[in-house]
Length: 175
Image (cartoon, rainbow, N blue to C red; front, side):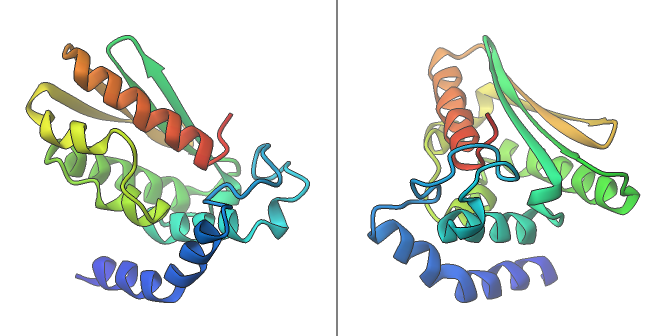
């Protein structure tokens, strides 16, 4: 209940900023600074991206500017990796709990966390939810964080997973 309340409160606080940026044609990756979040020269002034990073911090529990995402499509699905850039045992434990929970939520067809972070239905998630019985999500810890491996033999699900990962990679600037 506490986490859900925090996410709802954060939506109320940040919701207008994310919507305003999208209405002005900026979206979550707002035109300027298309590089890595710590390296894009305009990233600090990109309010849409800053709001995305803040919502990510709320949903994932760690500072997005000191963590690294990787979204990798694979022939049988793909993988999501999240690791800390710095030595931080509490942050690593938080990432591992988050990714383990994400694997469980996605397996149930629940994609509310990415919808919250990106303030929209993330491409691919509708099909992933509809075909959840044909997709497996495997969490495993990694040094400094963890990963969720997404595996399926269903071609429609593979396509949806790839769309999901591509959107995530672009929006999080995880090139």
